[in-house]
Length: 336
Image (cartoon, rainbow, N blue to C red; front, side, top):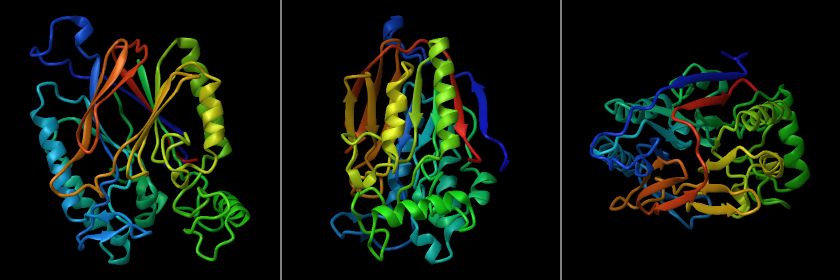
C-alpha cells in the first residue's frame, strides 16, 4: 500500500429513517458523526505540556462510549463516523502499550453499524510508524456526490518519517530555521513550528489542487478533513499546520470547498471565511473534557446547509452552503 497515492471508494449512505419530517427540505441528504482527540491511555489523569489543562486519560474511553451510544440510539443514524486523529495518547508508547491501547479503543467502535474513518494526528505518529499505520485499521478508505478529502498534515514532519527521508530533512530544516529552542516542542519564532505539528508536501498539494480543479468543473462540493487546522481564526497559532497559508490560498482559488474539519486544538474553534464562504470548524477534544460532560457531535447535511448537533462542550452550529449530491465519496491522501 506504500505506493498508493490516492484511495477512492464510493458508498451509498443509508436513507434517513421514516421518523424524519417528510418535507424534503427537512430531510438530510446524509449524516455523519464527529469526534476528535480521544487520546486514551490506561494511566492516571494529568495535564497538558503547559500544565494549564487537565487531561482525563482513562475516562476518555467512557466519553467515547457516550458518543457511540448516542449515535446508535439516534432517530437518524449517522451514515459514517469521522475520528479526527489522536485516538490514543503518546504516553502509551513510553509504556509499551500502543497496540493494546489502540485495540481497546477500536473494540469500543466495533458494535456500531456505521463505518468509522480515521485521520492520523501527531499521537498516532508518536505510537506507530507510517508503514504500520498503512497496514492498520486506522488506514481508512471508503466514504459515503459530496466529496470528503482526507489530508495528511504530517506529510512533512519529523514524526513517523525516517531520518533519511526527504520529508524528515525538510522538516528539520524548517524547524531549525524558525525554532531556535533546544526542545523543538517549545514554541519558536513562529509559534506553529514545533515537532508536534507538521506540513503538507509539494506532491500532496499538487494532488489536492488537481482534485479541487476537477470538483470545480463537476460542480461538486468538497469537505476537507485533517488533524491540523489551517485558518488562524479557527485555532491558536501554535496548532496550525506549518504551511497552512498554502492550503488556504489553494482553497480560495477554488469554488468547490465548503468546509474544513480539524482537531488538534483541544478547546475547539470556528471561523467562517466570508471571502470564500468556507466554514473552518475545529472540534473540541475528548481528552480535556471532564468525565461528567461530553465532546462529540452529529452532522446533518441538507441541500442548503450543514447542521452540527453537538453534545456537552461541543456546541450546535449551522453552516450555510449549497450541497448538491445524494451520495458521498472519500478521497484520501496516502503514501506521500
